[in-house]
Every structure is written in structure tokens, then in C-alpha cells.
Image (cartoon, rainbow, N blue to C red; front, top):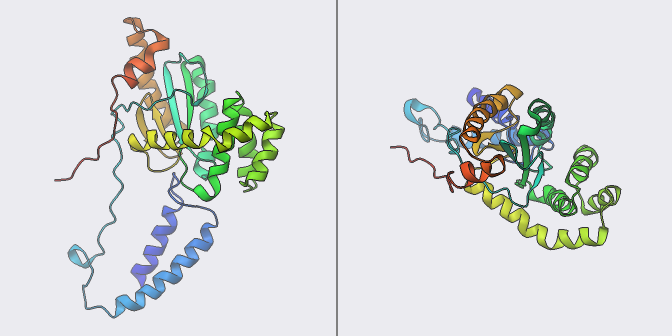
Amino acid sequence: MKNLTLLISAVALSLGAAACQQDNKNVERKVDDLAKAVAALSEKIDKLPAGAGAGRGGQPPARQRRPEPDPKDVYAVPVDGAAAVGPADALITVIKGYEYACPYCEKVNPTIEQLHKDYGKNLRVVYKHFVVHPQVATDPALAVCAATKQGKFQQMDKLVWEKAYATRKFDRANMDALAKEAGLDLAKYKADMDGDCKSIIQKDQADLQAAGQGATPTFFINGRYMSGAQPLPQFKAIIDEELKKAQERVAAGTKPADYYKTWVIEKGLKKFTPKVEK
């Protein structure tokens, strides 16, 4: 039973990790439900022969970690048509793969704001949708996509975080109210939500999955993978490395406006292939 208690604690901690892979709403309720399920399972385990189902040394088999891209590799994640904040010729492009129901996507927002302040015209942040909680996060993604088509990504993004995420009102009616508040052309907004934006969100998700994303938020810094709501110094460590490289390449003749296309899209990996352990 002690091992089962430890298992419950471990799962509870996993729900508090730095990235969303499942719905984190009502975490306490979920842990309570899990405790009941594990308690029921313990009765069955107690009836098994000694050592049955155990791994090496009588211990439970270790949980396999999801394969992730090597942070040193560069992935050619497309950015055309996606919402972006920062100049198109910035030497650093940070892609944020995110959704609006994920607490870690919201938690990292102040870090992104600080990066804009610290790097100024050298930084562009591109936003691509990666919906892991489709029941609640789909309508916000569609609404922000529609706002992006009207050049109002930042206005709608801010409203969704402040008046949908904060209140957990992710329904279509609230999205429509926020679109009106953002000053959108509502007829076009609704047509885009029900039309092109569905395929745009699917493409965003496919682009990010191809590069190895499996949770939110995930970042690609000039194509280099980083997962979770990491602290500012971890972002800056990669950005500083990439900025130094970029400045050297620009000095050697690469045009700033062509930098991402030349060094990330053309030279980067097109697909993440998990390494097979021998």
C-alpha cells in the first residue's frame, strides 16, 4: 500500500509539470478519483502471486518517457500565415505551439513579454495552435484564428486570456462576445471560424507534430526544440546562442529578411524521427 501511495503522489506531481498533455482543470478531483481507482486496483494486486507484474528486482516497470527532439537539432517549422508579434526580418524566430486551456501556456506569457523587451527588433514570436483539450480549447483557437485574419491577433489573444481562460468560459457565445469587443467584422469572423480556420488549426497541429511536439506549450527557437513553461534564463541561453550565429551569418552575407527561410526552413529537419534504443 505504501508503494501505491507513492504512485498517487507521483501522478499528482506529474499533473503539475511544466507542460499540458491532458486536462488540468479540477486537478484535486482527478487525483481523488485516481486514488480510488488505485485502491480498487490494489485489491486485485494483493491477490496476484508474489512478484507478478513486477519489473527487474520486483519493482514496477519504469514508465517510458515520450521521445522528444534533440534541442541541438533544427526543425523546419513553417511560419507563413501564422500570427506573429515582432518584425518579419528578426534574426530570432520563436514559435510557440500552444492552446488557450493550458495553464502553462498562460504562465509563460510574462516570460515572452520580457523577451520582447530584452531583444527588441531581433525577436519575432510566431503563434501556432496545438489543441490538446479539444472540448474546451477548439472555439478559442478558431476565434483567435479568425481575429488574426483581420489583423487583430493581439487584441483577441489578450481578451481570451483575460476573459475566457481566467473565467474558464471557453464557449462559442463568449468567443463571439469577445470578438465584438475586439472590434471584429462579426460576419467575416463567423465565416472564418466555420471555414478556413478549421483547416488552418489542423495544419498548425500537423506542422508541430511533425517537428516532435506532443504537449503544450512547446517552443522552437530558430527551429530548436524546447518544451514547457521554462524560466527566462533557459530561453535566453538558446536565444543568445542563435543570435550570435545569426549575426555572424548576416555579416557573411545572409539578408536578415531571408534568415529564417535560409537557415531554418531550407536547412532544417523536415520531420522528427524518434531514435530507436538498441
